Image (cartoon, rainbow, N blue to C red):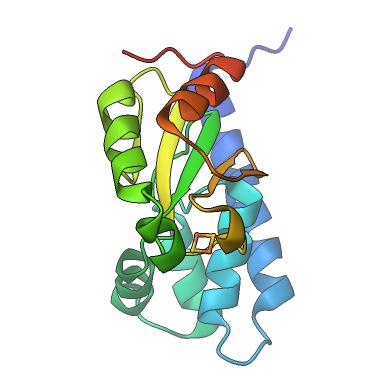
Length: 169
Ligand code: FES
């Protein structure tokens, strides 16, 4: 009888992840200025950029690890930790700012106990800033798991959080 140890399972999962990442990188590496498209594609597929992505991307694009790391930490859009099960994005661009998105952000921070680029300790939700969701006429705008909402008040944000079963403090 064959048994699989946790170490073997973990090593297999690691190999599978590396193989997936190489496939994604290969699909985008020939684009002009490939680094950003590659990083976007990896994050779109995995939800974040694990540390092991850096050497894979660096090798494929003939860059140093420091160059890859520098770019992925420069842009706030890129995550280096897994996202929560839900993601709430609050627009911080001009039209939404003029219609109260800063107050909405403060409300979200208080209710969730986290700031932008953070995830609640239970892994339920990540809070992210976004700079224009193309919904300026209905500011302030919020996106919850890819669904767009306009004219969001604090009360409506609470209702949206309740709808995805996220406890607020
Ligand atoms: S400024 Fe917020 S949606 Fe455009």
